[in-house]
Length: 137
Image (tube, rainbow, N blue to C red; front, side):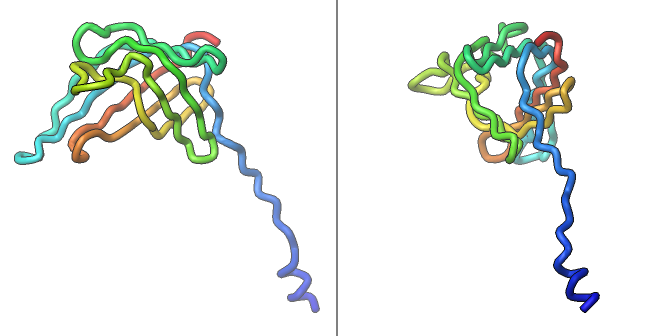
């Protein structure tokens, strides 16, 4: 009888949902590329600012001259799966973009101050990584 009542005991877990990022963030975008023949990894980076506002969407500004495009659009966050999806309104409808656009689904970690996002590109030889700090609400 004691064993049966112990097995029926309900345990409450103190699980907190992932924080939803919002506000203005600044930091570094890094593109990692692995050469499929040699396995060597090289990287390029740019300083960016990302604004995330639910009502108005997202906006990317900063060092957008060569590597990463300045852009804007809509986004949605799934805190339960730690994914954030971006629909870039400036993404070309045909051809291959010259610069990286914040577009598609990214894994994210956010602790209230630091926002890290990562996505993987063509043939798993590319990784897009954003390491950003919150600078304003």
